[in-house]
Amino acid sequence: MMNSESALMQRSKVRLIGLLYMAVIVFAGFSQGYVRANLVVPGDALTTATNILSNIELFRFGLAADLIAFILDAIISVLLYQMLKPFGKTLAMISSGLRLLAHPAIGALNLLNHYMAYHVLSGADFLTVFDSAQLESLSLLFMDAHRYGYLIAGGLFGVHCFFLGLLLIRSKMIPGFFGFMMMVAAGGYLMETFGDFLFPGNEEWLAWVVGLSAALGEVELALYLLIKGTKDSYSGKAN
Image (cartoon, helix red, strand yellow):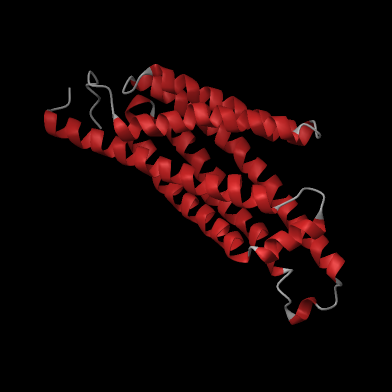
């Protein structure tokens, strides 16, 4: 059993995870759901290039927001491991390792594609060997590469969500409903990643699937952790 002081510290740590998780959702949602969703037009290199150059500050803020989200996700990964290792050390390590690979590693590296989509349009002297149409096509190619990199990261993140949900149910520190909903979110991520790669042409509805499942799983979990922390009846395990 945990004494009252350690229980308070545990609840504070859980609320910190919730706060950081909400920040990740806001920053990543802004970058992916607002910036790229409004500036990138699939299959239209000219319009995409025009949008990027006309909204270059917004495009840069999108990159910065993603980078902040990935840095916070690295911190969350460590905190989740510390919180959940009493309920399965190996499983908690696998879960946090997958989260670290998905966003802080693959996702952060993938931001190079986001940056290069602007860089090829920047008018640098060494790019003068290309004409405007070629540079616009290169820019869209980099944004396509970014989208596929996002999908690869999403596959790893989906497996993380499944293991995280399992650990949350096992821990009994919060209602099992949230663990189950994280497994639903896992299904959404995996459907989008493998669906887009194996069955092209279904990208639009798969994006709705992952958006809805992530909202039901991740947003609900982050809000519960932030507001409630842990269940009042939770006694915990010694670390």
